[in-house]
Amino acid sequence: MKNPNRRFKDAVYEQFARIGKAVSSPKRLELLDILCQGERTVELLANETKLTIANTSQHLQVLRASRLVEKEKEGQFVKYRLADQKTCEFFQSMRILAEKSLAELEQIKRNFLEGREGMIPVDRDALLKQVQKGDVIVLDLRPSEEYRAGHIPGAISIPLKKLKDHISSLPRSQKIVAYCRGPYCVLAVQAVDILRAKGFNAVRLEESVQDWRRMGLKIVTGD
Image 1 (cartoon, helix red, strand yellow):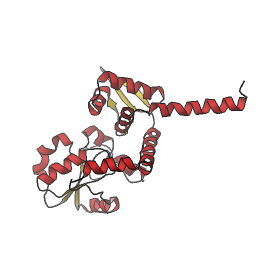
Image 2 (cartoon, helix red, strand yellow):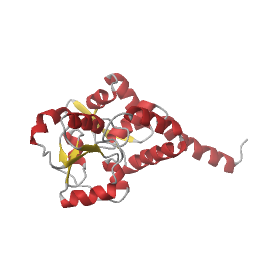
Image 3 (cartoon, helix red, strand yellow):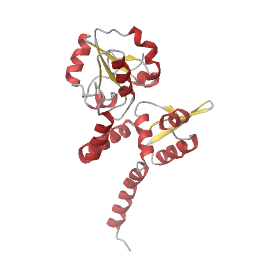
Image 4 (spheres, one colour):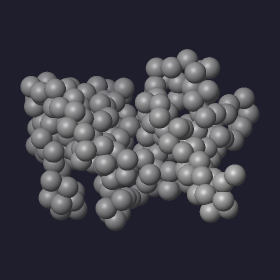
């Protein structure tokens, strides 16, 4: 029989492993990344991840069983949110570790962005000064509910699907900086492509709102 010390250690690491098993699926990681932006219904999460509602619910149940997310019913809809901000910090730490450890990740990103203009990472310190001076226009391309949950100070909310309707209202005399959910979100990439095709001086900001929060920079909520 195992001695008490060994039983204790085995029990502890078994609990740690529950988190590892919960995040062992690429789709569950994507769900966590989206929920870092704010709460979502199952239907919206299914649409974002291109999964069926049934498969999305199954993945969410696994995350919920490991206490990473929680749910609440509102009328006919079920909304999910992160159980704690620490969950998002965990996801961010895992992403940073992967970026440092896996050369394949950088190669995938390089291949995707190759040939696209305006994709060179923006110096966030210089950007902050430009935003404060009003020298640039900062666009938040995420859905409006994500913008309200938290955004970069001074950013204007124009969800990607509405960008073409608002292009005529954007000034051509100023640089436009587009951002979304971080370095692996394609909303800002598509926005920069659209804006540059129309003759705007547009660039992409890789950092997300969560990255700014992690760096101790100010985040604004509401409209």
